[in-house]
Length: 297
Image (cartoon, rainbow, N blue to C red; front, side, top):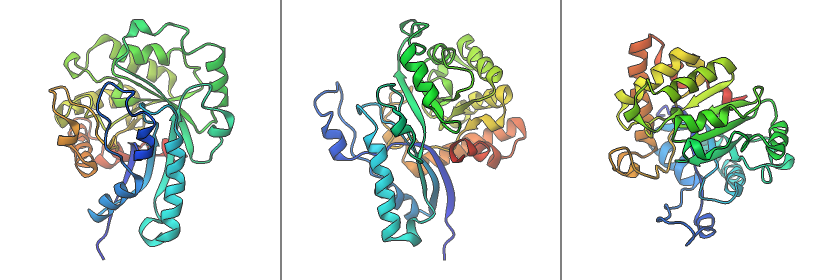
């Protein structure tokens, strides 16, 4: 029997045509194609890859994270029908970080590991110094359980930094897409350097890949990952991820969907880890999976 290669996907989105109908006509761009958990698993398993731990992350175009909860039921049904094929898959989820939505009940679901703030290309000056630290947000942070994290996504390093500085220091945080989607600013961008310093001082901040939104060239992404590893440690990088279904375009205007599928995304992070390993002498496997406990705990 062919031995499957085990993989962790720390960032993927599952949603159906029914989910997309809820936002049809309300967005200024074409909706993505549905991306189901079943199709994702079947494509990888048929390609010889066994996803053992998957994190279904809140999809920013949806008003809530009901698709995340639905995926838990979908996997349960798959495992009941075919335990040999799907039985080793563990699915967790990161829901929308909105105080009114991330209630005690939703955060108490045993598969929910965190909540996500999505800011996309918000400029730093649009983030007031109290936007994420008012009474409602402070109450939300208190509802987070010790094993749960706050997931922060902004393309600008300084935007990420402004948000992080408003988060109570005992709250674990994951900074999306390596903290910056602006490769042209390089690894010496003052705001990004300050973000790494803030993360180091806190000691409970992770940076997440796959990194192709920083640069779709592995050797360029590796420069950023190397700096993260040197600043906060190899145990603070969650590199193994696909960010499927690969929506948007890279820095050169090429659609991510033309560059990646889940298998190619794993190949990308492997290449990044290989470059980083050569620069740091840290084993590739440690770079890829050294922080997986952040999702599995």
